[in-house]
Image 1 (spheres, rainbow, N blue to C red):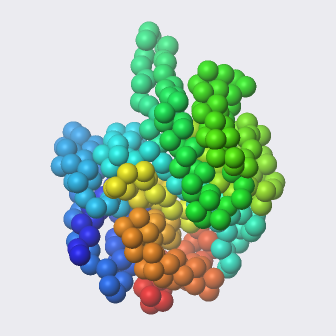
Image 2 (image 1 turned 90 degrees about the vertical axis):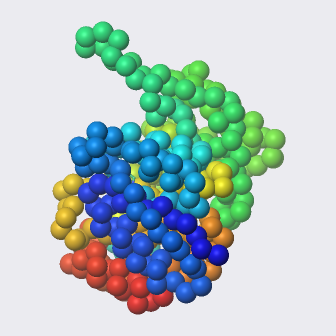
Length: 327
Ligand code: GGG
């Protein structure tokens, strides 16, 4: 069977790390891919007047899976509709420390299960008067229950004992109150062990004692921010993959953005995107190939070569070749 994969490198280092992940996928035996590349992002906007052309949206909406790189200034017009195109509601972001990588907190093994469809990323923003802007934050019981079910299932299926619900219900009483109530109801119905934490305090606790946490179920913005914090615990954004899932299709992307400061230099760390491709393999049912890719990345992280973000002087190409070599 041929897997039809839409490839959207996007902006900046997306143009470097996505081809690296495709090279790794092409090196796998026993999985047949057909990759088709589509445009999106700042450059596409400048050239065509649209950050996400209709054909890219439609391709993602009908492909088996989409591998995405990064978006720059046009992120809201690219990533949010792409996540909608694949009908995803959960953004799963594992953050774990790897042997061989200098991590601030080597004991970190966290997975953020981020609600992907509403919260402050619902896109309802306006300037209501000169100098006065507003944002409508949408939180529904259905979407909150759905992400909680997903998070508790994920913890159970992947052997995580600690589940934490992140919120700020003491201030956003109605919206985060609804999120917390819905998540707690799901936990209680299941008789699950869980905790909840105010997201600001949680940021500090994750920094000081990450080993006390496992799966963190979070509203959209909190999940985005806390997972970047966790990247700092394990060696940086070059190591964090993500999967936008929940329905049959999926969108897989590194957590990092377009990194304009290093774009075009050939030194971007491809590991986050290669690990995102491994999450894609899992989603498509190729568990063994996914494990092989993860092992290869772990081997390279343990023994090098490393890109400059991890203290090395290797290029994106060197690291990709080393990963392929191990497959
Ligand atoms: N690869 C993901 C990317 O481009 N991230 C930049 C960004 O702004 N992300 C916002 C989000 O993940 O919701």
